[in-house]
Image: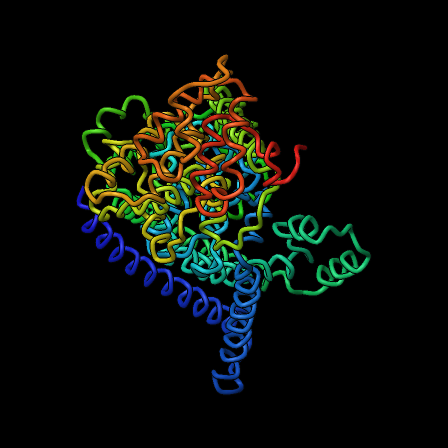
Length: 595
């Protein structure tokens, strides 16, 4: 896909549409002012003053009304993205208590933010929504948030989820949210002309009255009835009809132009998403899945106000549709894919009325059995690792770490980057990230995070390794193997010192299964552990293999003479011996008591 050409093309079309939009606004205000100024002459009035006396006051009234309502609406829309996300029923995700699927979403957002060169925004999850959708809200990159439905994280693969997140980041980077806010505010001011006409004609604007009561949570008030009676008693029906006619026509044209701008920005965001991810197929598949879901509507009753923010449409449109047809979006991404999916998506057309089922609300479906099994497996691994660490370090030390290092305790990809940093594995250049993911299973986010951590490296220690291990094991086996292979390659290419060797042995000891209890009271090879600090790594591992055959009392007796010196001089070596031989720390009174 020629995504740079597509983006430039969308920019040019957007400029033209915005110019037409502004002309529609000016034309509606001018025609309405002229109509109001000419109203006395339609009833037989004679010209007694300069024409300015007839046309200037209506022009000032219409301009003041339009500008005032536009500024009022803009003030409402300028609220931060978090306020919009909460109105849509979003719940802020925190890494500390997120599930595996939610952590995957947080990683995807952080990874895409780095690729886009933007700050990582807060992430909100719409738990009640089973459709595939997402949105970006906020007037600036620093106030922006990303929202994703539960259906999206349940039904999409990681690449597909990254594609729709990249689409939303494109809206942030291209300033689409700010543009939409200004267009919506101007349209609201223009709609005030017809709204004023309804007040003059009926004494009440029925189109916005119920919405106002719902927003303000107020019931009917005697003042409202009084205004209605007074306005209907005045001879203003002709004025009301004129304002409704002129204001409605102008508002309809402005609404169509605003929708056309939104559709063009959707095409541009699709092209920018391909630029960020360097992949077209995941975005096409995400669009296809969003069309195949049972429902597209969101649970929040206020969702229709923010339809233009969504990844996919949530209401029928016609000429006022905020999103182009899905098949057209796919065609601009890949014409061959559009031809292949034309039959499947033939009934999904944004300019036709969708079925009532598709526009009904669908609650989120539970995770698949495979996803639930994976979540249970990862939680089980985490619990086992935490219990094993607690056996050798009953009291956790306080580690004043930076946020990136702190996150390694909760998320596997952060932990992977921290592990590679501890072993001084060099970061790959950005051009090799996706190839490395394809070959070894390490995601681009890990390499991006590694580059950030290497700006503030920390010395390897048992505390740091045990800080990240519970999150590290909550990953697939091939990812763990790829990490170990990277560390081995680093050792082969650059060599290693004694501390890194002990850290490597400790890592393998924690990842290895708990050894079965031995039956011997002594073993010739195990006696070499009495001078463990003097042994080479190969000799040390040979001695440990012999010690694994000993009973627990024999292991304790073997290590007790070392407890006076090695924990201080060689803490990594001491922890390796305790973990590999599965001897609890409380036996030596060095790390607290058993609890």
